[in-house]
Image (cartoon, one colour):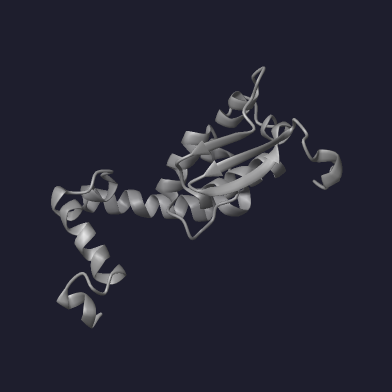
Length: 159
C-alpha cells in the first residue's frame, strides 16, 4: 500500500492482509497492517495472531466505528459533533482508544459536550443511567408500532 492509501485491487485480491470488519451490519474493509498501527488496541490484538480471521463481527455502533477506523488509517482522532460525547467515549473505550488522543481542533467541542452532559447529570442523575426504566421499556414497542405499523392501532392510522 502506498503512503496515500491507494493500492492495486488486482494485487490485493485474495491477499492475506485484507480483512472485513462487520460492525452493526455495516461492513468495513481494511488491511490487517492498518489495524496494527495502534498496538494494544482491540483490533490489533485480534489480528496479531497466527491465524487471524478474514471477517470479524461486532454488535456495536457502525457510525462510530467509521471514525475509529479512520483513526487507525490516519493517526488522527476527530470528534463527530452529531454524536453524544458520552456514547462516543464508551465506544472508544471498547475499541481500546483513549479520548485524550482527540485532535486539538476537536478537543474543545468534545469537552464542551461532555461537560454539558455531566452538568445535566448533577441536576438529573437519571441522565447518566444506562438502564431505561421498566415503564419506558414496556411502552417502547407500542410507541415504535404506532409510527412503524399503521395497522397496529386506531391511533396509528391517524399518524
